Length: 446
Image 1 (cartoon, rainbow, N blue to C red):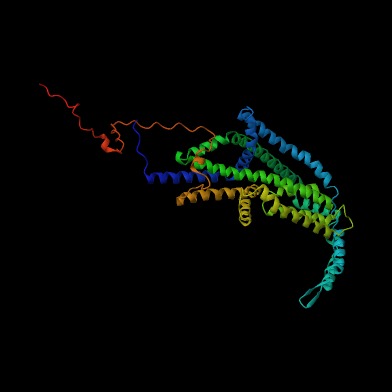
Image 2: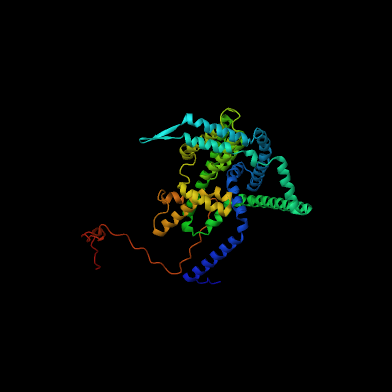
């Protein structure tokens, strides 16, 4: 069968645009399942080290993937079973004495004139006593018992709400159906996540080779190096975030336990979990800790005002955050992400609006990956080397996960090639034979 002529440049551009449009359309159709796909990809990527460890001890990759995924699922199920009883014991001392908090705040304000009666502003003396008296008077005028509902009032509010609903049976039925629908959706989502993670984790190296196989052979070594650098960013981010979450969670738990804030274990776990949200995570974890300190005070120092305990909690979080920024992050994460904090904050907000908490979590490595690929494209556009820190021989030596296909045999030559030219003569006089001598003269025939 004769080979068809190659496509022209215009045909190639049209086909490329059509394929790109169809791909974007298919991606838009899968928008409701983006969170599921992204979460499965992240889980499959995180499980690759364990899968590779099992495959190195002669376990088939399919069986190793199944064992690792089941182990991860078991850990997810058992972790709440272990933590919930400990959290219930930890939060038992909690007490929300709002009346006592107002009284403690009033007492703390009354003590301020002895601590800071005023200050000097150039040649003027600023007396803060009138300000303290006004604040204390305002606090004394507030009676929380006047606007806090009593238990009987809560019951009346609930009864009125049920009567206004009209049909209590219908309301209960609708509520039960809604709960069943949500539970069914959660079960289906977990099942799909399990199946998708299983397949992606098993065939992730093959998928990568398939993607790189679409690249022309001359550019495949560069793309393998680009993928290696991308993987280095994500590996450093995930390992660093897990270690940072553990360190910050333990530090907050230990500090709050020393201060005597009730629920220190729960607040430490919350601080560790919110550590995955850059910049805004520590602030979000600080708010409930300060609120509990204001409302419950300290079990270790019950005589101290609640406001003093709250200030101690704020100081603890600030110290932990500064130690994290200047000691832990440079040593653990290093320059793996290398993004400005303002850019990370913008990315967290944008990806959180699109993908929720999962988008906020992966915003930093996703932005770093995007900038890495843009830098590669920029180098190719201006004709520079995309990886100036590596020699071409080092890029060529990057190992492949699958053996490359055998190169196609070049077509045989049907015409006769000309003979190669002789090498240049360096001493042309030596090639001239000398004249024959008298002894070598040929004899003429008689």
